[in-house]
Amino acid sequence: MIKLVGYKKCSTCKNACKYLEEKRIAYDFRDIKEKPFTEEEIRHLIDTYSVNADRLFNTSGILYRELNLKEKRPQMSMEEKIEILTRDGMLVKRPLLITEENLLIGFREKEWENLWKN
View 1 (cartoon, rainbow, N blue to C red):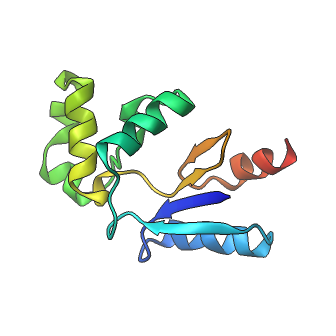
View 2: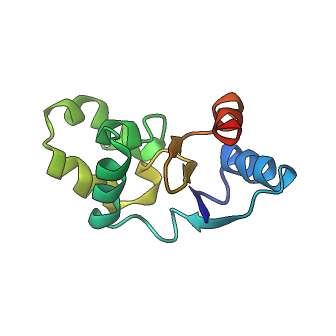
């Protein structure tokens, strides 16, 4: 089953849901604000999909800026990055499309189209 992790009020996430529905692709939606990732889940994404933890940060978010993470993140350890990503779902880039073999971060329609072609 395909999982879509996003935020209900996010326009990009709404566009991703609309895209999946138009393609008649079934998915489970998880609101990252209501149910943030656990440390175990973040580690799973990093290990399973060989993704750099830095790519999981919502660098354009208000909370990211308020916490001054642009300056702090380069000096943070992997454990610190994982821990901070679990503090608040708004720190996680969205939407995340998760399949057994793939993880897509953000909604770029061409990238998503390529996933269904393969």
